[in-house]
Amino acid sequence: MKIGIKDFLYQIRFFLIPYLILLAICLIIKLNFTKDEIYYTVNTRHSDWADFIAPYVTDIGDGLTTIALSAILLLFSYRKAFLLASTYAITSILAQVIKHIFDAPRPKLYFANHLKGIYFIKGVNILSFHSFPSGHTVTAFSTAIVILYFLKNKQWGLLLLLVAACVGYSRMYLSEHFFEDVTIGSIIGVVVTIPWLIWIDNKQFLHTAKWNKGLLKNS
Image 1 (cartoon, rainbow, N blue to C red):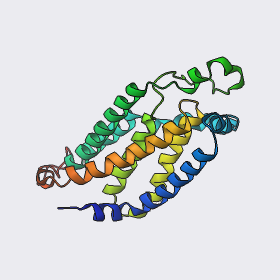
Image 2 (image 1 turned 30 degrees about the vertical axis):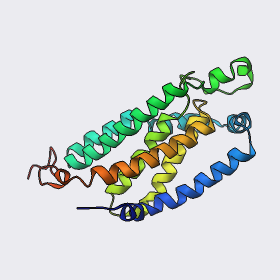
Image 3 (image 1 turned 135 degrees about the horizontal axis):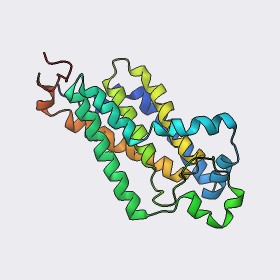
């Protein structure tokens, strides 16, 4: 099976087109408001139900979630498990490299002299360093694209985008990241995942009978 970039982009169009619109909106927001203004706009809007659900939403973008999904896929298809795991490895390593290059402060450290005016959710461990980019957002958008690639019904792309976007927003809501961290995180997740999947899934060995088996599917 050979897939070209046009075919791939067409397959994920229900994710990609709305994402590009969302990205344009993010750019407009960034051009019109400062980093601090965007942060405080999010931070001053909170509720009990959002405080409860946000930590669970953010966990969707945790690397352990993608690793768990890869382990489940391993039961049915070595190829799909490899594609998801390798994509996670590539994107997460890149995100960590960029984090350490920029070593940007997270909101807790950035606003260290104004913490009394910031709302934090009780029981959430707030980090201080390596804010840029948001690794959870990178993983959420990357994993969403891989999952959509596996699905027969590509219209699920819009829902997957919504889930990934909610993960990104949860990182801001929890005061773990800034708007810029999340926006760039989504771009990294999308821009790196697409060429990687196209390149790696065009490798002939992944389409042999052995790789299309799983631990529960040996014949």
